[in-house]
Image 1 (tube, rainbow, N blue to C red):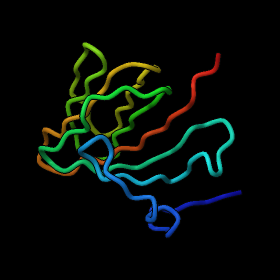
Image 2 (image 1 turned 135 degrees about the vertical axis):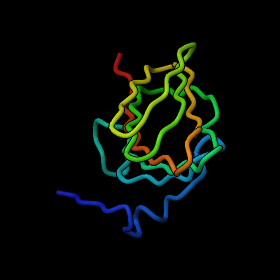
Image 3 (image 1 turned 60 degrees about the vertical axis):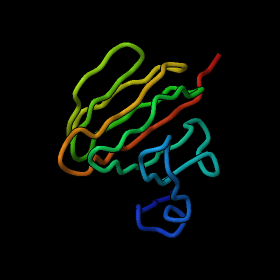
Length: 114
């Protein structure tokens, strides 16, 4: 069993800026996981945006706190606490924090299987 806390050194050491907007950390990733790509947490300040990008894996963005405007390909939708957005492999996606507080999301990614 492996238990990681967002304040563990192994998580804090992975801090990076995700796609130009969010401060993110890898909670669990391919260094440990076998089938799932990663579990990350990201904080997006008001007015900041995770820029449009395409990933080579399927993802889920889960809003833990706050809200934002989620775009997947040509679809846009306001999302908030408790919302999960499925992003298919190869879909262009972005998230704009158009709220008044930080938007905290969990991102789960899994490689596509042929």
